[in-house]
Length: 244
Image (cartoon, rainbow, N blue to C red; front, side, top):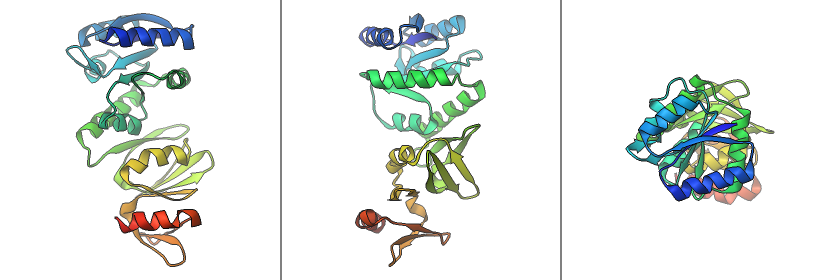
C-alpha cells in the first residue's frame, strides 16, 4: 500500500510515521505535505492508495484538498485533534477517521478497512457530501447505510426503527427497508446520540415515532407497530419515553 501524509504539525507527523512503520512495515510513504496547495499537488502527482488527511492544515482544511483532487480513487483517513460535531458527521458518513493522539489499535483497524475497500469515486464523493451536509445541517443529519452491494443516504429523521438480523441490521424507514451489513450494536452506539432508544436486545427505536408504552410491556409506534421491551430495560425505557 502506498500512502501520503497531510499534516502541518511535525510531532504528529513523525508519530504517525513511526506507528505506520510499527504496524505495517509494507506501507510505503510517498511523501508529506503541510498546506492545501502542496497536498493537492502531492496527491495528484503520486496517486497514493491511502491519504492520511488532517482536517486543519495550513491555508485551509482537508475538505479544500479533496475538492481540488483530480479523479482520486483511493481511501482517505481523516485525522483530527478535535472531538466535536465533525466527528459525528464522519461516523454518519461511514468515512474513516482517527482522533489524535492516534491509538495503534484504531490505526490498525482503519488500515485493515482501507485494504479491503479502495473506494469508487462516486461512493467517496457521496460520503464526503454527507459529511458536509451534517456539518451545515445539525438539525437534519443524514447517515450512510451500507449493504453488501450498495450504500444509501437517508435522513436520520426518516428512520422509524432498527431490528437486529444477526450480524446485520434491518432499517425500517418511512417508505422502505434497508438491510445493512453492520450489527445493531454499531448503530446503537451511533444513533443513541440522536436519542434512539434500545428497547430490547434486537430493537432500536426512533423516539419521534413512539406513541406510548403499553401496559403489557410493548412500545406502540405511530404506525401501530408493537415493539417488545425487555424486562431489564423496562424501567429505563419507561423513563426515556416519559422525557420525550
